[in-house]
Length: 193
Image (cartoon, rainbow, N blue to C red):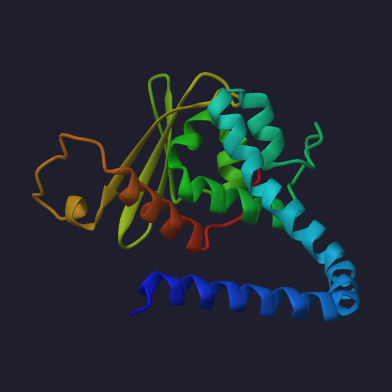
């Protein structure tokens, strides 16, 4: 009686040799195919790197580089408006990483979300509120116009009902991402600066 592993090894060996001879017979076709696919592979690898750019900067806590990654076309003029493609990319990034919003300025928050549905001043604080039917995001600023966000408060539908108990813990990151996504999807007026 033959050993069962002998059959398995023989079958694998035969399959590998068949593959080897097939590749050898078609080497010219395969090399042409690889040369034709090379530009596409380079483009795909290059596009993968751009999504990592902003993420790498947040790990380093280098706010200047993060801003440059989110708005690479930025110029220091009074009438600067980022290109819509950069805004869309930045919105996707902050939706998946809502903690990054605390590194941005009032102007950059305006670029991302537009004009707030409500603005309020309390002593030294400026509060911008973005409200959708399912969630509210309050953005708190202290200091001048170019000061970064100090704090963000998120509330979801259950928190908005009259008589609801105040939330004792911050909203989980997953729910913050959902709320940011709803606000990005809402059509707020363009920010004028």
